[in-house]
Image (cartoon, rainbow, N blue to C red; front, top):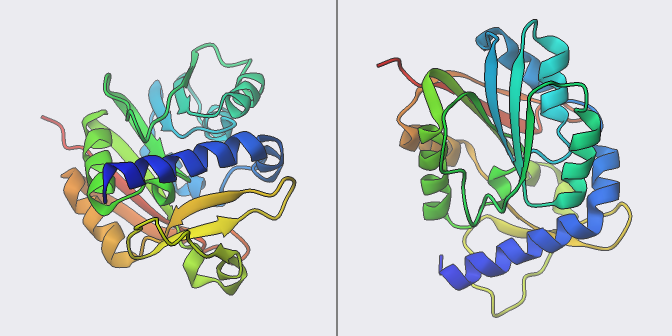
Length: 235
């Protein structure tokens, strides 16, 4: 995918989250059920990098379910959502929230016990770009630590396919790239890529990490998201 196309798609999603921050936050108040399956792999004290953290609900979930300290670093490109994260995490003693366009500038420093990527992969334009993004995040995992990511399987559901909007003719997107409308609050469009089983397996492979678990969870049928939990081997 051409860099200019990647920039255009990123711009579509930056505008989407700026427009929908309030209504998006209202629909993302609860933790994903699939996160519970991650808990047995986590042992505090824990350092966490939450990439595309939004309103910080993963940090809230970990603090509420783990018996021990959690140092939480949330990164997102939407200041209004980060303000909601700040309000939700005021009682945590070690919280860092960073405004950062993670698609243009993936986290490039530090290592963590848990690197989480939830609700983000479908917004990363370009197959080669997604591969490099996963390699970069694998570098942020401590030896013995976990990289956890989930892909949104929206295209498998008629209710989501009904939201697909035609692309502008001059935008050369790749296969399985879609433009979806938003039906809560303001009118807005977002770029989403559908990751199938084969692509998810390929993304796991490029990390060089050990696959611990893969499963489906969340949504009205408990299968909307496909999870991969990976561990970095100790040196």
